[in-house]
Amino acid sequence: MEGDKYLQQFLAETSMFNNIVLGHLLPSSWWVTLPHFLQTWLRNYIAGTLLYLISGFLWCFYIYYLKRNVYVPKDAIPSNRAMLLQIYVAMKAMPWYTLLPAVSEYMIENGWTNCFSSISEIGWFAYIIYLPMYLVIVEFGIYWMHGELHDIKPLYKYLHATHHIYNKQNTLSPFAGLAFHPLDGILQAVPHAIALFLVPTHFRSHIALLFIEAIWTANIHDCIHSNLWSVMGAGHHTIHHTTYKHNYGHYTIWMDWMLGTLLDPEEDDSCQKAQKLR
Image (tube, rainbow, N blue to C red; front, side, top):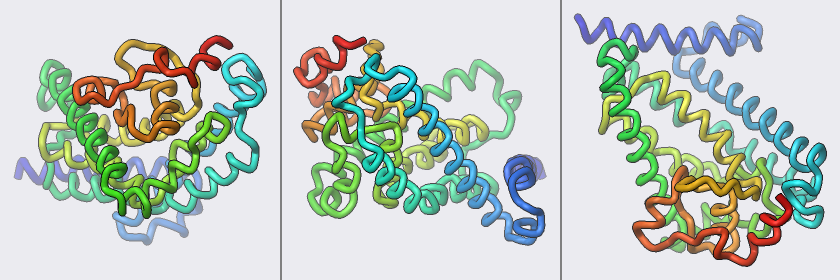
């Protein structure tokens, strides 16, 4: 009975999220009769699309127009055509990307994971311990998956090469962050779902971190090197897009540092010009 109570809490939460997004953006007749899983997918699809487009447009407007030549030199600003292509690729993949959070929520609602609904169930101390464990699993998983997408030639040719057509500073933009082949994007996000089975995870934190991915991937594709110690910033990721063999990490440099694939922007000539403009 206690387990059923917790599962009902998860179902109530996902239903609340569905009502917040769909109830404010769509006529009720369009979605209330849909099965719960499809409501959840539709909510994630709409929220993910809005987050990608709004954050991308605001980001590009700020760094390419309001701060023109401050963060990015004029000859490194991507063309409108390049950015529209990135949006096109991301929009084709978005319906598939957003299946992952819908599936993860389905698994959580059915009690297949180690998710918990409220921090009060385990206490703040345990939450502060478990959250870094979750992030370590995600970091390791994305590093390994990203590396395999490069090392296994068919995976690179048919999946990851779609993203690596953006291989110069003037072809990268915040919109490139989600411009992947659909399966590529899903594979690199799967560690978020795997972590749910390995460590107790706060449900809302999991959902928030999945959507923070959209902001983070926009950030690491803007070519602006922030030079924050241990953070896998845009300077590192720009190198990844130009050398193809360095900086596979996601949030931090630690996996690259430990496994010998790290190349710091300060040691790479292609980053020096951008840094001098800051």
